Length: 95
Image 1 (cartoon, helix red, strand yellow):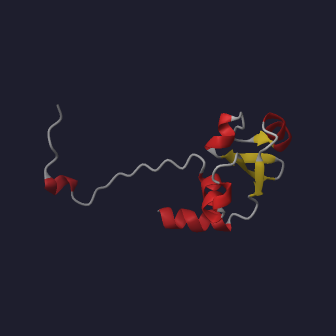
Image 2 (image 1 turned 90 degrees about the vertical axis):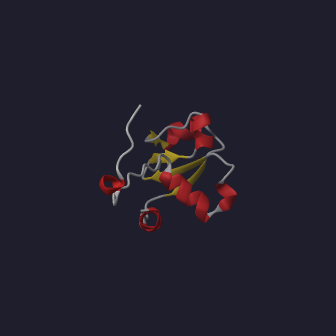
């Protein structure tokens, strides 16, 4: 039973929580809607830095080696995530 916060104290203060757990994968799915229903991983060097929820259901985890990820999920679609520009642009839009 919390007391309501008087308006004068709450003015100007907003707390926002945004879940960006698979942000790079989400950016790629926005850029290419054909990827939305496929297991998707974003690759940097020899690692899958993140994956969408479809891939996670099939055993792909963050920072898993590409080799291990493809063994777990042969149908995994990998997108090169070396260029951070689209992620920075989308991050700016989100914030």
